[in-house]
Image (cartoon, rainbow, N blue to C red; front, side, top):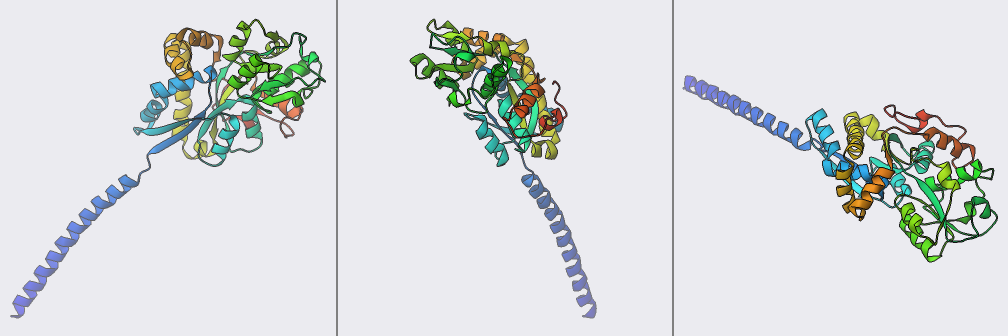
Amino acid sequence: MKKRIISLFAAFMLCGALVGCGAGETGQVEENQIVEDQKEIATLNIAYQYGSAYSPLAIAMEKKFIEEEYKQATGQDVTITWTQMPKGADINTGIASGQLDAGFMGTAPAVTGCLKGAGYKIFTNLSGQEHAMHTNHSEIASLSDLVGGSNQIALVNNGSIQHIILAMSLAENGMDPHALDSNIVAMAHPDGLVALQSGSVACHLTSSPYIYTEREDESLTEILEIANTWSVENSFIVGVASESLYNDNPKLYDALCKGIADAIDFVNNNTEETAKITCVVNGTSESDELFYLQSGNYSAETKNLLDVATFMVENGFVEASSVTMDQLVFPNVKGN
């Protein structure tokens, strides 16, 4: 009887050990599955604005260049959300709140954000575009005709790159760079065009494609100082990325940089194919879109970025004692 009890106890212990081993294996499988399930899928939230200056972004979306770069680097997928926003201030808010990882905006608001500690730096240049200013008043022939008067000038908003171009042109022609600040009325590019043609404002300072529509309008006159001040090669639209993306996810940041560079290269090397894609996005004809693309300058390298930033600092458009490229861009950025 004693032997039988010992045998039953041994069998019980063996069974328990076997069950324990089985539970351990099952538990390990379940643990691995939980880890796999909890592994975060990479996400990237990007904001952009409208117009042919942003054409490489339409290509990046269409061709999934960022996704491809990330897949090659990590073997994993990334989900990208592209959001169109009306102005750079909204992008600033989005990055500051953590809702956006990157965004594209004019040079001036990007400089302001960098110097004010908005939590981002420039990671790439995107494009340069010709700028021009037109008037519907025959008696206005130059910027000096506007100084001291009340004629309104439509441009995107105070602190925009158009505002800075206006100020730079005033200074270049021997006038106070703030002489026309009170004449500015903030309007989106298309609204400014309509306001100019209807006579609601006296002048409109804008970029592609709106300047070409205005140049074809015989009732309008171009004020040439603006075009003479601003080169199509200058950095107009830049990409900014959050410092958290740069610091915490370098592989995703690198894929973002490379993907945008791939898109810029595609625009430059396949302009006609690009026009077929972007004309749908921008609501233009294919022939017009091709002209706009050929008239712009698309490059990942910044051009005269520091000059613009220095002008802004020296003339009080942003509060800072000085500015350097290191304050504005991440280390991978090439240019000046």
